[in-house]
Amino acid sequence: LFGEDMAGTHEVLYIAEKLIQQFLPKLSAHMEKENIHISMFVTQWLLTIYTSTFPFELVSRVWDCFLVEGWKVVYRVMLALLDFASKDLLKLGFEQILTYFRDFPTKVDGGVIMNGSLKIALKRKHIQKHVNEWRRSNAVYENRSKSTGKMPRRHSGESSASSTLNSTSQGGMMMSRNKLAMAKGFLKKTKEIKVQDLSHTLLPIIGSEKFALVLHNVFTHEECSDIIDRTEEKGYEIAHIYNGRTHETLRNCTRSVLNDNIMAENWFERIMHALNGTEFEEKLQGATWVKRSKGGKPLQAVGLNEMLRVLKYSPGQYFSPHNDTRFVRGKDQGDRAGEISRVSVYVYLNEKFKGGNLRFTSGSRYYDIVPKTGMVVLFDHNILHEGCNVSKGVKYVARSDVMYSDKAESFTVSVAGTGFTQEL
Image (tube, rainbow, N blue to C red; front, top):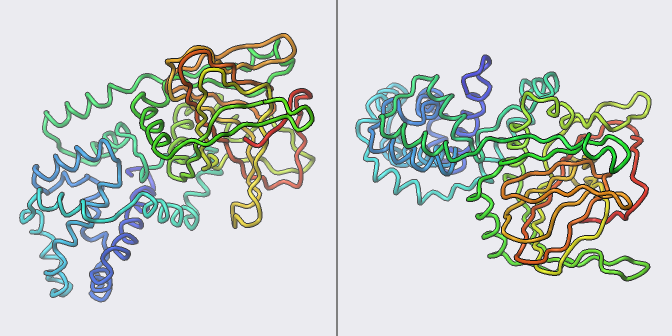
């Protein structure tokens, strides 16, 4: 929010303006008629997350929710405040409106506003829609991404409490010692993320150096448990895969699919944040190990496949050695057509089971990874691997793919010569 070009601030204001138009159309039209832009009153509210002038009763309640929900509650409270004031504002002209907003914070009842905010049917998809609109049309954002090879941190989905605390404090935020202590206690629950490079470890196994990483402690136990609960509530379906020639069972687990753009974006941000400043950041962003045809343009990571597949393995279930298939977006995907997956993403959601290791294999040689809750494994689609038999308990693992913008005519990729490929 407080970067050199204030790009984050402009994005916040754009989202706020669009949400007011969507949820409070009469007030939005009146503001436009009176030449009142939201930056005249909303900027201070949002950039300080209401700590600048609003009563502590409201601020404390907003922050309680913000540390859990992220920016959604900030926008929802904004709409509740304006809805509360709309009857007065619709009767006022330009100068009267500005005067009204100067005194408005002192008239606010925190309990009334928070209760009112819960009645506003704001969803994350509403916010994400406007985030996508802004970033597609904002040349500054696009140029920064291309020139630095880094994806700017997102704020509007599942925001990081630590990044928001840092940025708001730079803007002059004042919090009571009790609230700040609570926030710090919340942040301490997150373990340090550790990055483990497997490329050299796998060299004697697969015979070549390929991209493969293990990221430890990317997700908390609570987050993983929430995903398991969500999929169990949605239900699992049989997801068996058979060899077309021999009819041998290759995979015999069940699967629950979550089509969730916001979760996919949040996961991608977590991964890139974990790799920030490391040698692997550039590798993943540009798929630098992929050989390009002469004159071919470089690849650029654009996010994760939003089709998140959660696989559930019970005792006796497994996935035989295989290579993951590349997914290519079709022409019906608009400006995302042609995006292609290159990297497999495995997110392990639990660990209280026996067996079920992720095994990279070639002939009689192999290397096992023992799943741990919150662990993320990233590896080139072309590495042969298997999900070993679960002997006790139940294993939950979520699957996605890193998607790349494929602008070149063609690419030549070294493909493992064993195993089979299968749409997962």
